[in-house]
Amino acid sequence: MNFPIRPRRNRRTPAIRNLVRETALSPADFVLPVFLHEDAEDTPIESMPGVTRWSLEGLVKEVGEAHALGINAVVLFPKIEESLKTPYAQECYNDDGLIPRAILALKEAYPSLCVITDVALDPYNSDGHDGVVARDGLGELHILNDETVAILVEQAICHARAGADIVSPSDMMDGRVAAIRAGLDESGFEHVGILSYTAKYASAFYGPFRGALDSAPKEGDKQTYQMDPANLREAIRELQLDEAEGADMVMVKPAGPYLDVIARLRDTTTLPIAAYQVSGEYLMLKSAAAGGWLDEKKIVLESLLGIKRAGANIILTYFAKQAAEWLR
Ligand code: PBG
Image (tube, rainbow, N blue to C red; front, side, top):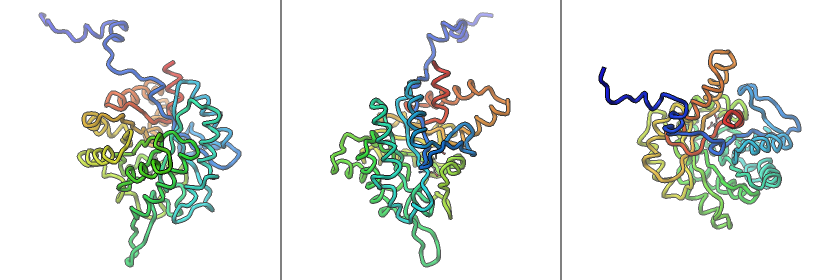
């Protein structure tokens, strides 16, 4: 047959395929999310096989291993003791709290590491919501926006004081990026960046994470603040607000089921885009591989490549260490 144009020529040998490859993963793309608690023990997390809730000492060791593999950033998630949880989540800006101590320990051990912190009330809030909960006369729950934002500002400043490089508000309250930016600047932390969870969807894929931290809402769900999975234009609206409010980087979460959102934001902003491959995505791949049904290395690298190809510069993934090892 006479086909002058044959795309298969560019796929003929490994050398040619390497020449024409459009996307490459690197350990430097990854942010490792790490869980920590006050205990001296390192505890395997039941809802996330292969993931551990670390003691402070274990955390420093784990992050050191990741950093040695070329992973330059971590994001910290604390499990807070039940007795420290309150309706106004005061523990979240305690300078002697678990997160400030972890930031200090990590920055001391690894000055070249980028430490990112999660800014939201859910681990500290006795109601398990990302914001302060109020109940109206009819008994309906309301998540108070502006009262929450004031606390998030304190939390962000507390993290900055301990040495955080980037704070990452994951709460989805309105106006929080502007308020945190102003609070950081007034406190002399104009060099501390904000990675905003711009399009964080009200997703069932967070289930295993809430198990890991015991942070599930005691009542109700997060649909009045996290986004409706059906919406794409609304993500652009959130992006425009975050850009105007001074976010340095924006995030889409979850990642795999929302590649169209990543791609659209990529086309719409010049800011770096992060995507969070969340606990449920991790669990799906991990359990299919554990069952022998999927090839773990291939499926994980393909899932991460897809996220990067869609337009994410930065990928938060529980596979960061494994993937960095595979990529070596
Ligand atoms: C809460 C927060 C959540 C995750 C990161 N920060 C859960 C939630 O919104 O309920 C989920 C991460 C994951 O599932 O891996 N501020």
